[in-house]
Length: 289
Image (cartoon, rainbow, N blue to C red; front, side, top):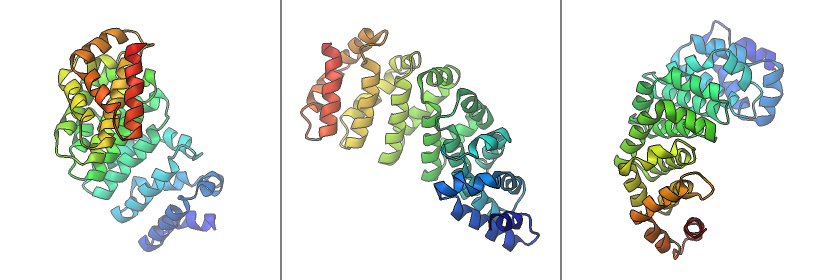
Protein backbone atom coordinates (compact mmCIF):
# COMPACT_ATOMS: atom_id res chain seq x y z
CA UNK A 1 0.00 0.00 0.00
CA UNK A 2 2.75 2.45 0.90
CA UNK A 3 4.06 2.53 -2.68
CA UNK A 4 0.57 3.33 -3.95
CA UNK A 5 0.11 6.15 -1.42
CA UNK A 6 3.52 7.67 -2.16
CA UNK A 7 2.81 7.52 -5.91
CA UNK A 8 -0.43 9.35 -5.22
CA UNK A 9 1.60 12.36 -4.07
CA UNK A 10 2.74 13.05 -7.62
CA UNK A 11 -0.61 12.50 -9.35
CA UNK A 12 -1.90 15.34 -11.50
CA UNK A 13 -5.30 15.31 -9.80
CA UNK A 14 -5.36 17.57 -6.75
CA UNK A 15 -8.01 15.36 -5.13
CA UNK A 16 -5.78 12.28 -5.37
CA UNK A 17 -2.78 14.18 -4.00
CA UNK A 18 -4.83 15.50 -1.10
CA UNK A 19 -6.19 12.02 -0.33
CA UNK A 20 -2.63 10.58 -0.40
CA UNK A 21 -1.34 13.25 1.98
CA UNK A 22 -4.29 12.70 4.34
CA UNK A 23 -3.58 9.00 4.32
CA UNK A 24 0.08 9.61 5.22
CA UNK A 25 -0.97 12.05 7.93
CA UNK A 26 -3.15 9.40 9.59
CA UNK A 27 -0.37 6.81 9.37
CA UNK A 28 2.22 9.26 10.76
CA UNK A 29 0.35 9.29 14.07
CA UNK A 30 1.65 5.77 14.73
CA UNK A 31 5.11 5.47 16.27
CA UNK A 32 5.40 1.98 14.81
CA UNK A 33 4.66 3.23 11.27
CA UNK A 34 7.16 6.08 11.65
CA UNK A 35 9.82 3.53 12.56
CA UNK A 36 8.94 0.99 9.89
CA UNK A 37 7.11 1.72 6.65
CA UNK A 38 7.86 5.48 6.68
CA UNK A 39 11.53 4.62 6.97
CA UNK A 40 11.51 1.71 4.50
CA UNK A 41 9.92 3.87 1.81
CA UNK A 42 11.79 7.09 2.67
CA UNK A 43 8.41 8.86 2.67
CA UNK A 44 10.03 12.12 3.79
CA UNK A 45 11.55 12.67 0.31
CA UNK A 46 8.34 12.91 -1.73
CA UNK A 47 6.71 14.74 1.21
CA UNK A 48 9.41 17.44 1.16
CA UNK A 49 8.86 17.74 -2.59
CA UNK A 50 5.13 18.31 -2.04
CA UNK A 51 5.95 21.03 0.50
CA UNK A 52 8.04 22.94 -2.03
CA UNK A 53 5.07 23.72 -4.22
CA UNK A 54 1.44 22.84 -3.53
CA UNK A 55 -1.88 24.57 -2.92
CA UNK A 56 -2.57 25.55 0.70
CA UNK A 57 -5.07 22.77 1.39
CA UNK A 58 -2.37 20.18 0.58
CA UNK A 59 0.35 22.19 2.33
CA UNK A 60 -1.60 22.22 5.61
CA UNK A 61 -1.91 18.41 5.74
CA UNK A 62 1.63 17.83 4.43
CA UNK A 63 3.14 20.16 7.05
CA UNK A 64 1.10 18.44 9.80
CA UNK A 65 2.58 15.15 8.64
CA UNK A 66 6.07 16.64 8.70
CA UNK A 67 5.52 17.69 12.34
CA UNK A 68 5.10 14.00 13.22
CA UNK A 69 8.12 12.94 11.13
CA UNK A 70 10.23 15.37 13.17
CA UNK A 71 9.42 13.86 16.57
CA UNK A 72 12.52 12.68 18.41
CA UNK A 73 11.79 8.95 17.99
CA UNK A 74 11.29 9.25 14.22
CA UNK A 75 14.21 7.94 12.12
CA UNK A 76 13.25 10.42 9.37
CA UNK A 77 14.22 13.39 11.57
CA UNK A 78 17.93 13.34 10.60
CA UNK A 79 17.54 13.13 6.79
CA UNK A 80 14.81 15.81 6.87
CA UNK A 81 17.17 18.14 8.72
CA UNK A 82 19.89 17.51 6.17
CA UNK A 83 17.57 18.26 3.28
CA UNK A 84 17.14 21.93 4.16
CA UNK A 85 13.87 21.72 6.06
CA UNK A 86 14.72 24.62 8.39
CA UNK A 87 14.49 27.20 5.62
CA UNK A 88 11.20 25.74 4.38
CA UNK A 89 9.64 25.71 7.86
CA UNK A 90 10.81 29.23 8.66
CA UNK A 91 9.08 30.43 5.50
CA UNK A 92 5.86 28.66 6.58
CA UNK A 93 5.86 30.66 9.83
CA UNK A 94 5.45 33.80 7.70
CA UNK A 95 2.36 32.50 5.91
CA UNK A 96 -0.90 34.43 5.92
CA UNK A 97 -2.58 31.07 6.51
CA UNK A 98 -2.95 30.44 10.25
CA UNK A 99 -2.75 26.63 10.03
CA UNK A 100 0.52 26.89 8.08
CA UNK A 101 2.00 29.30 10.62
CA UNK A 102 1.08 26.94 13.45
CA UNK A 103 2.51 23.90 11.64
CA UNK A 104 5.73 25.69 10.67
CA UNK A 105 6.46 26.70 14.25
CA UNK A 106 5.27 23.34 15.62
CA UNK A 107 7.65 21.46 13.32
CA UNK A 108 10.53 23.74 14.37
CA UNK A 109 9.61 23.11 18.02
CA UNK A 110 9.80 19.34 17.44
CA UNK A 111 13.05 19.76 15.53
CA UNK A 112 14.65 21.73 18.39
CA UNK A 113 13.77 19.12 21.03
CA UNK A 114 17.04 17.65 22.38
CA UNK A 115 18.80 18.86 19.24
CA UNK A 116 22.50 19.65 18.98
CA UNK A 117 23.64 23.24 19.24
CA UNK A 118 24.27 23.68 15.51
CA UNK A 119 20.64 22.86 14.65
CA UNK A 120 19.39 25.25 17.32
CA UNK A 121 21.62 28.03 15.97
CA UNK A 122 20.45 27.32 12.42
CA UNK A 123 16.80 27.58 13.53
CA UNK A 124 17.43 30.93 15.24
CA UNK A 125 19.33 32.22 12.24
CA UNK A 126 16.63 31.01 9.84
CA UNK A 127 13.81 32.54 11.85
CA UNK A 128 15.50 35.88 12.62
CA UNK A 129 14.77 37.83 15.78
CA UNK A 130 12.19 39.97 14.00
CA UNK A 131 10.17 36.94 12.96
CA UNK A 132 10.43 35.47 16.48
CA UNK A 133 8.93 38.69 17.90
CA UNK A 134 6.27 38.64 15.20
CA UNK A 135 5.27 35.12 16.26
CA UNK A 136 5.33 36.02 19.95
CA UNK A 137 2.90 38.83 19.27
CA UNK A 138 0.66 36.71 17.02
CA UNK A 139 -3.03 37.10 17.88
CA UNK A 140 -3.53 33.32 17.78
CA UNK A 141 -2.80 31.58 21.08
CA UNK A 142 -1.71 28.37 19.30
CA UNK A 143 1.04 30.21 17.43
CA UNK A 144 2.13 31.87 20.67
CA UNK A 145 2.20 28.61 22.67
CA UNK A 146 4.17 26.75 19.97
CA UNK A 147 6.65 29.64 19.71
CA UNK A 148 7.16 29.55 23.48
CA UNK A 149 7.58 25.77 23.21
CA UNK A 150 10.23 26.32 20.55
CA UNK A 151 12.06 28.83 22.78
CA UNK A 152 11.90 26.42 25.69
CA UNK A 153 13.39 23.61 23.57
CA UNK A 154 16.11 25.92 22.24
CA UNK A 155 16.99 26.97 25.78
CA UNK A 156 17.73 23.54 27.22
CA UNK A 157 21.06 22.07 28.39
CA UNK A 158 23.48 24.50 29.95
CA UNK A 159 26.05 25.13 27.21
CA UNK A 160 23.20 25.75 24.74
CA UNK A 161 21.41 28.13 27.14
CA UNK A 162 24.59 30.15 27.68
CA UNK A 163 25.43 30.19 23.99
CA UNK A 164 21.97 31.31 22.82
CA UNK A 165 21.62 33.90 25.59
CA UNK A 166 25.05 35.32 24.75
CA UNK A 167 23.89 36.01 21.19
CA UNK A 168 20.13 36.63 21.60
CA UNK A 169 19.79 37.36 25.33
CA UNK A 170 18.66 40.95 25.10
CA UNK A 171 15.85 40.17 22.63
CA UNK A 172 14.70 37.05 24.50
CA UNK A 173 14.53 38.90 27.82
CA UNK A 174 12.56 41.67 26.10
CA UNK A 175 10.09 39.12 24.71
CA UNK A 176 9.69 37.42 28.10
CA UNK A 177 8.99 40.79 29.76
CA UNK A 178 6.37 41.71 27.17
CA UNK A 179 4.50 38.44 27.62
CA UNK A 180 4.56 38.54 31.42
CA UNK A 181 3.15 42.07 31.27
CA UNK A 182 0.52 41.30 28.63
CA UNK A 183 -3.03 40.03 28.91
CA UNK A 184 -2.36 36.34 28.43
CA UNK A 185 -3.87 33.14 29.78
CA UNK A 186 -2.33 31.04 32.57
CA UNK A 187 -0.79 28.49 30.16
CA UNK A 188 1.05 31.19 28.21
CA UNK A 189 2.43 32.79 31.37
CA UNK A 190 3.41 29.40 32.79
CA UNK A 191 5.38 28.53 29.63
CA UNK A 192 7.08 31.93 29.78
CA UNK A 193 8.11 31.43 33.43
CA UNK A 194 9.43 27.97 32.49
CA UNK A 195 11.61 29.63 29.84
CA UNK A 196 12.92 31.96 32.56
CA UNK A 197 13.63 28.95 34.77
CA UNK A 198 15.69 27.44 31.93
CA UNK A 199 17.62 30.71 31.53
CA UNK A 200 18.21 30.70 35.31
CA UNK A 201 19.77 27.26 34.90
CA UNK A 202 22.50 28.62 32.62
CA UNK A 203 25.93 29.40 34.03
CA UNK A 204 26.47 32.84 32.51
CA UNK A 205 22.82 33.28 31.39
CA UNK A 206 21.73 33.61 35.05
CA UNK A 207 23.21 37.09 35.14
CA UNK A 208 20.71 38.32 32.55
CA UNK A 209 18.02 37.68 35.17
CA UNK A 210 20.01 38.83 38.20
CA UNK A 211 20.85 42.18 36.59
CA UNK A 212 17.26 42.75 35.46
CA UNK A 213 15.30 44.11 38.43
CA UNK A 214 12.10 44.31 36.42
CA UNK A 215 12.20 40.55 35.73
CA UNK A 216 13.12 39.76 39.34
CA UNK A 217 10.10 41.75 40.54
CA UNK A 218 7.90 39.83 38.12
CA UNK A 219 9.19 36.48 39.42
CA UNK A 220 8.49 37.71 42.95
CA UNK A 221 4.98 38.75 41.93
CA UNK A 222 4.20 35.33 40.42
CA UNK A 223 5.46 33.56 43.55
CA UNK A 224 2.48 35.06 45.37
CA UNK A 225 0.01 34.67 42.51
CA UNK A 226 -3.38 33.07 43.10
CA UNK A 227 -2.62 30.32 40.57
CA UNK A 228 -0.47 27.46 41.89
CA UNK A 229 0.93 26.60 38.43
CA UNK A 230 2.37 30.09 38.07
CA UNK A 231 3.68 30.04 41.64
CA UNK A 232 5.44 26.74 40.98
CA UNK A 233 6.99 27.97 37.72
CA UNK A 234 8.27 31.12 39.49
CA UNK A 235 9.73 28.92 42.24
CA UNK A 236 11.71 26.94 39.66
CA UNK A 237 13.32 30.23 38.59
CA UNK A 238 14.26 31.05 42.18
CA UNK A 239 15.60 27.55 42.92
CA UNK A 240 17.87 27.68 39.87
CA UNK A 241 19.17 31.11 40.88
CA UNK A 242 20.02 30.22 44.49
CA UNK A 243 21.36 26.67 44.04
CA UNK A 244 24.30 26.36 46.39
CA UNK A 245 26.88 24.40 44.46
CA UNK A 246 27.15 27.09 41.83
CA UNK A 247 29.54 29.99 41.61
CA UNK A 248 28.16 33.30 42.85
CA UNK A 249 25.23 31.63 44.64
CA UNK A 250 25.93 33.55 47.85
CA UNK A 251 25.60 36.94 46.16
CA UNK A 252 22.43 35.85 44.38
CA UNK A 253 20.95 34.51 47.62
CA UNK A 254 21.71 37.79 49.40
CA UNK A 255 20.18 39.92 46.67
CA UNK A 256 17.01 37.81 46.60
CA UNK A 257 16.77 37.83 50.39
CA UNK A 258 16.95 41.65 50.35
CA UNK A 259 14.06 41.61 47.87
CA UNK A 260 11.90 39.68 50.33
CA UNK A 261 12.06 36.33 48.52
CA UNK A 262 12.92 34.38 51.70
CA UNK A 263 9.81 35.73 53.46
CA UNK A 264 7.68 34.49 50.58
CA UNK A 265 9.43 31.10 50.71
CA UNK A 266 8.61 30.80 54.42
CA UNK A 267 4.99 31.58 53.68
CA UNK A 268 4.89 29.06 50.83
CA UNK A 269 6.47 26.35 52.98
CA UNK A 270 3.20 26.44 54.98
CA UNK A 271 1.12 26.04 51.80
CA UNK A 272 -1.62 23.43 51.62
CA UNK A 273 -0.41 22.58 48.10
CA UNK A 274 2.16 19.75 48.57
CA UNK A 275 4.15 20.71 45.45
CA UNK A 276 4.53 24.34 46.49
CA UNK A 277 5.31 23.36 50.05
CA UNK A 278 8.08 20.91 48.99
CA UNK A 279 9.61 23.32 46.49
CA UNK A 280 9.68 26.14 49.08
CA UNK A 281 11.30 23.90 51.70
CA UNK A 282 13.96 22.73 49.22
CA UNK A 283 14.71 26.36 48.31
CA UNK A 284 14.96 27.37 51.97
CA UNK A 285 17.45 24.55 52.56
CA UNK A 286 19.76 26.25 50.05
CA UNK A 287 19.85 29.24 52.39
CA UNK A 288 20.65 27.08 55.39
CA UNK A 289 23.32 24.93 53.74
